[in-house]
Length: 141
Image 1 (cartoon, rainbow, N blue to C red):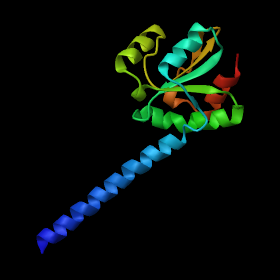
Image 2 (cartoon, one colour):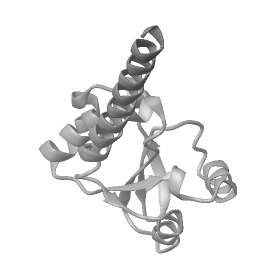
Image 3 (tube, one colour):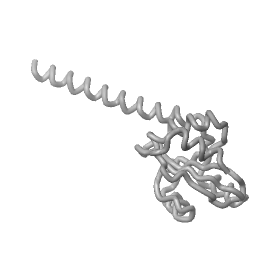
Image 4 (cartoon, rainbow, N blue to C red):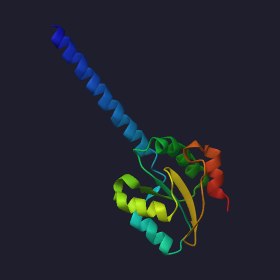
């Protein structure tokens, strides 16, 4: 009888943990609705084409990105600014490393502004930024 109860408790715990993990990932994915997802090679192409754009580099498995994402989502909704998103989990890690070195990206999340293909500024506080600070970053020249 004890074995059956122990087995049922283990099964219930496993189901609970799986459900929590799935919910967390779904919540983070919902926060990506305002971003325009692009590949790393598309981001490089935008730089080479000397475009003006905001680029968010992050990943859903980064705990700091998970904190940052909802605030960025709110700021994008308020400012109506287009922000391109590169999910580094979907890219070859060697390519990510080369891009990060070239663009001086030290950590994720990283939100940067490019003007004529040159990185002009980045959001210094990253995941510690408030919605207002992100809005200001997205609207100041």
